[in-house]
Each structure stands twice: as C-alpha cells, then as structure tokens.
Image (cartoon, rainbow, N blue to C red; front, side):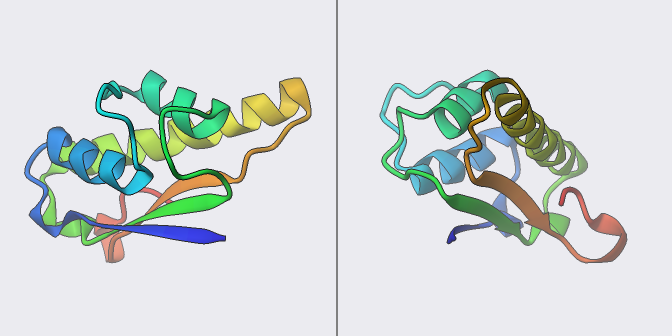
Length: 110
C-alpha cells in the first residue's frame, strides 16, 4: 500500500495541515478544506491525483499545538467512519486512511 508521509513538526494551524495533505494528495486548486471535502475525495474519489490504496502517515504531531493535534485525530476518525459506512452500505471498500504517529501520551490518532 502506498504511504504518503506528512511531517507535522512545523504545523502551527489547521491550514498548515491542509496545505501539506492536499499537496500530498495532488488535490486540484479548488479543493475545499473541510472534513466533507476530504471524505468526498478520499472515500468517493475525484479531485486528487493520488488514487487508493494509500495511507496518509503523519509524524511529528507531538510538536503541533493541541488544537491541530485534536483536529488531525478527528479527521482520522471521520475518514475511518466514512470508509466503514461506504463498505457497509455499498459493499465497496476503499483502502485509504490517515494515521498519526506521535510518541507516548501525545498520540493523537491511530
């Protein structure tokens, strides 16, 4: 499975997360920055050059502020839930995910 690696050590805002994620996915210029837009692109397809299967791996998240860590954790769960919903309701699984690899107690998502 393809692994897209993001380094969160310089993220100071959610906008920084979206900048790196959308660049890694090869998103079109008009791609929105919201959980719904990520579900549309990652789970349902389109608006990005990278196609499943892939996992987005976020490292260095312990260096980001708490709000960014929480947001990335939320996005990780939202993507996993959307993938499970699609599999349960359509019988189609799309192999994508977002995992954060922070150390120790700072672990934000998995």
